[in-house]
Image (cartoon, rainbow, N blue to C red; front, top):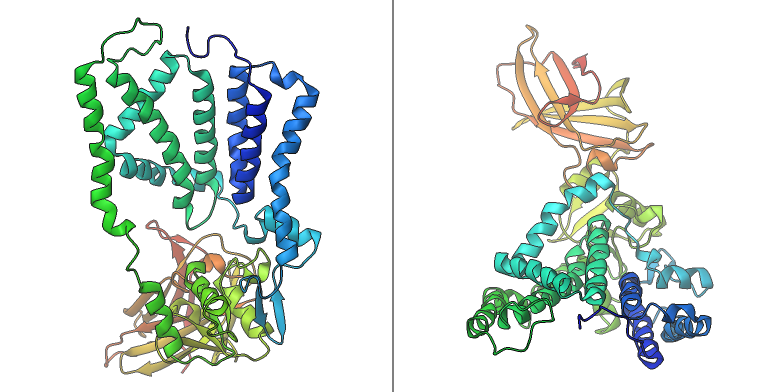
Length: 482
């Protein structure tokens, strides 16, 4: 009889245990909810009568919710001593990212308190090559072929319940991974690899039995060639383990500790605010504070520490530290030179960089005050140096820019001949134009090597994007002020 040809009665005890485990999985991670559609569909193939019992449905709902009572530990245990992440000091007050109320509780257990948002459809489609690469790296081409054979076997054997559960879950999880905008998305592929291994297992079983995949062939002796083939399949995981073991074995990896020992050896102030653009670079500070009781007076900040606009990106995070830090010293834990467009940075003991304020504190030496698309060129500074001419543009942002532009400064002599040019992406990778916000005044610095016998008379200023040099606005050509 084909495995799923006729429905079998699903014992209530089995159903209650199954849904209890789903509820327990939800206490570990909310993404366990992705298991439910496939599970319900699989159970419908096993026995499509069980869902007609209201009493059974109510009981299953209650048994699923029962493990979620564990979440009550959060408000009972909440407080500054429980999690330095959610209770950092900022200024003279504590930055309570988790408050002991129902709103914070709901945001915490649903992940909204640390949500990073989702990609657009275009951005999600752009993640497809990465997804294909990850599948290939973890299974090799033979493993991917086995997965396809395994799906074929499930269809031929009419194992609709297994197919419904594994395939629907894999599709939902894979689509989610394409859209979820988080840096450590690789972790979210782990359950997908489990589904792939299950499919490969069905393929191995069928190959070991001579590809008797319909499920109704008479018993026969094992297919000896298939057994050898199945044994050869173990080469794939062993080969993966051999190649990647050095990377998997993290027992001797002290890089993170060494990094933070170097940061603390730079002797930031005891009440310093330490900032990185990367969450994973700051979290070790919370370990040092909570476990080793070191640097307990310091505050660690990073973008998306919470969904609030003041932590939207590295620019708003640093500005929050300056404005709300109560005068506490603010340091970047590594050089981020692009931030010099917005902030005045000062050398400190490596790897620290001191943030002393906003970069555009004063007016430019040469006023321009001309519109330039969504920007306004307030003015510029220029001065000769040993390396050439240091040219600084003062941009006032009126409207948000959609992409990262490259700015160009070109110098011409009195005869109209170009004598110097410098093109660069203002803000670099840390604060490019797509992060600039209305109301900000930003400094765009250019160093132009200048022949000693040539004197600039006019300057051309522009912004463009892409190899097609699509301009943000028509370039400005200005007479150089002495």
